[in-house]
Each structure stands twice: as C-alpha cells, then as structure tokens.
Image 1 (tube, one colour):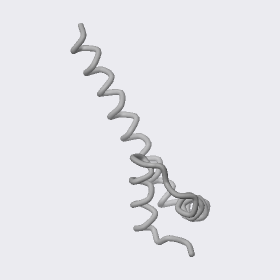
Image 2 (cartoon, rainbow, N blue to C red; image 1 turned 90 degrees about the vertical axis):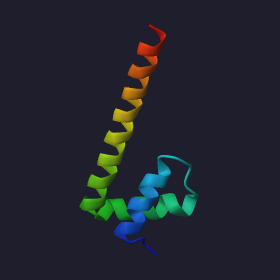
Image 3 (cartoon, rainbow, N blue to C red; image 1 turned 180 degrees about the vertical axis):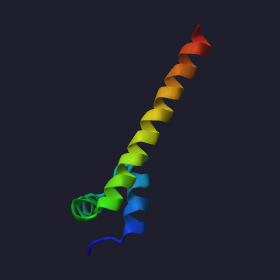
Image 4 (cartoon, rainbow, N blue to C red; image 1 turned 120 degrees about the vertical axis):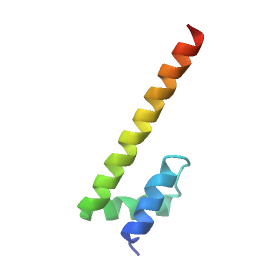
Length: 65
C-alpha cells in the first residue's frame, strides 16, 4: 500500500534521523516517483539539513579559532 502525502512527509523527516526499514524505503520511493509535491518536500528537507550542517561546521570552526 502506498503511503499518503502526510505519511510520506513523516517518513522523509524520519529518514533524515534514522535508517528506514526496507518496506518504508520502498513505499517512499514509489510515492516519490509519482508525486511532485512530495519530491519538493524531499528537496526542501535535504536543503534544510545541508544548511544546518553548514552552520554547525561554521560554528565549530569559530569556536576553535
């Protein structure tokens, strides 16, 4: 069964913090293949995660200087 957009957004968020189970990953890939809106949410989550990591690295570097 394919997850709803709400469930897909939840899985995308959780996938950033933990390894998803095989069934979760499969359902996510199928849903993302057909849903442009959820692909956009995925891109936004990835962008935010990279931005936070970059800020964290910058903060770590300024703390050691």
